[in-house]
Image 1 (cartoon, helix red, strand yellow):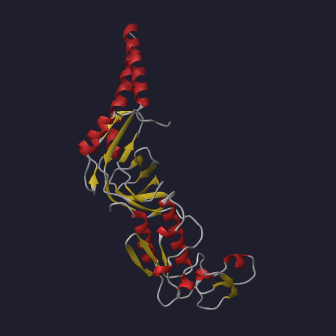
Image 2 (cartoon, rainbow, N blue to C red):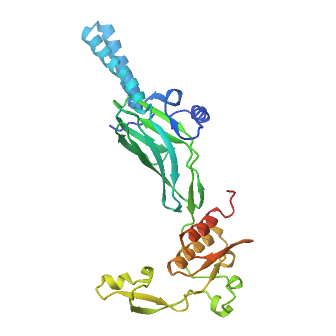
Length: 322
């Protein structure tokens, strides 16, 4: 049966959030854990109260036995629901950068104490996708909690909630934490013409070579030679059984380009950042050294994963306070 939590007043959640602002690692115990009946729990207690009233009116001993038996079971279930979440330790929240539109995966390390199997634990951010799993005793697991991304920047997921309705679903035990976690969201890549900044191009090339709107043209295929870049291999040709060939581009070797969103057409800055993001990925693929100009800040040309991440980070945080 799927249980839904009863709506909790916003003022109550605010009081919870103030109390639970703590740096990780955090062990969930005592006043950090709250227990509240679920919707099904309220329905169960209404029916139990009706059964009690009927037993009193008709002086039915079997009714009294059933009422107190069900009441005792539900009362004991409160402690099992609380115990199912008590004692686990949360630590090390981290997330890898993603592009806008992708799901950010926040990874949190969960440690379970010995001799206590934990079942149906749910981890989620407010109104987001839940990750529900069972955790064996004396274990240390990495739980991935997903969060949708809509725009570039630094995503802070907000309140982290850990909850459970085990074993009967009559009560929900939960804890709220506000971890110091964030995820860097790069602009969404938007394909289009390859436009560079000729004013900042390397001096060893003349302006006519660096200042076009098109990247080096594809000049054809050549037979693969040992040592050729794997990124230039024509995998489509290989998949058709026509042999192993390498793509060749005119004039791409050693050429340095600069990307500047101010030179792109249009008025939407977010669209320009998305275009620059696509150009950076293209330049990295064809191994063309590239630099970046954002306002008065210029990033020197380079290649490689660290340089790409640096440029994408500057695009993601452009116009925002870090």
